[in-house]
Length: 96
Image 1 (tube, rainbow, N blue to C red):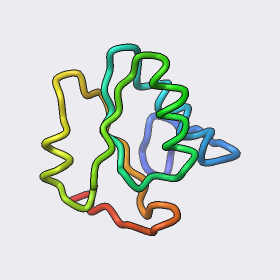
Image 2: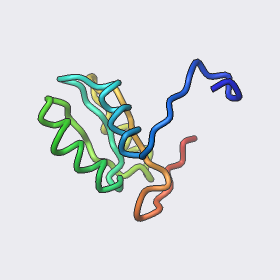
Image 3: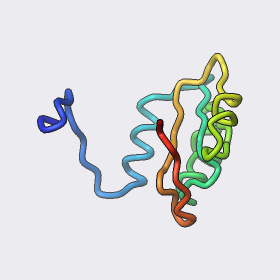
Image 4: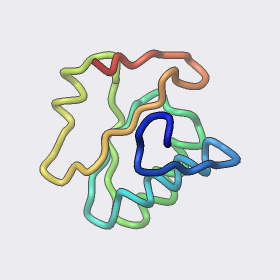
């Protein structure tokens, strides 16, 4: 965090530990998240099986088209979550 002038940092043993921590830290019941439609299988599974049971909604969107991401935004959208490059397809999301 110091090198990037950030407020802090967190380290995780796995990508799924990081993913679940971010989702659970930013989302609560009634919230919405826009998620890439080519996410890692574990990410897809945990959003559909675990977080959906908590009343959190997800839209699975093609992140290679910024217009589709924008169209998926709702009033209750609290998080836009991408994995780039995606696993296993190696799809890239242009963050500009």
